[in-house]
Length: 124
Image 1: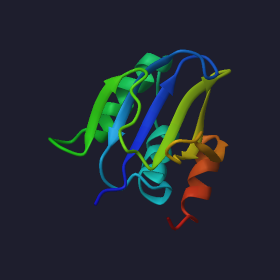
Image 2: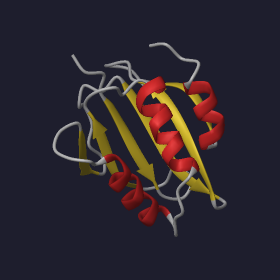
Image 3: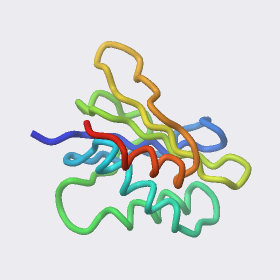
Image 4: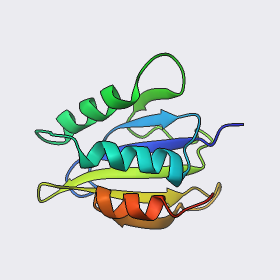
């Protein structure tokens, strides 16, 4: 069974959600979290909408595993949730563990390089 995750792209410090990207397999921090942070650490962008398009292009290499859903999509049986925002021209990432029927638990947040370092030490 896959470890599912949702990546939410938020405009302006956690404001409006632009869209979300669902990953069916390897959604745990040392999988998707590390992959996402590596992507974000090396990506050039011109704002959040450009960033979203670049991240989706980076991950989507064929059918299956990566899907894009409208903003506000919930209850995809995800185990982990990632938030990506741009704050003062810096990309920030937050990692949450999803506990169904409760609020997600914040595990880590910071720049892609800071979160990548944390993700590489995790074993979920």
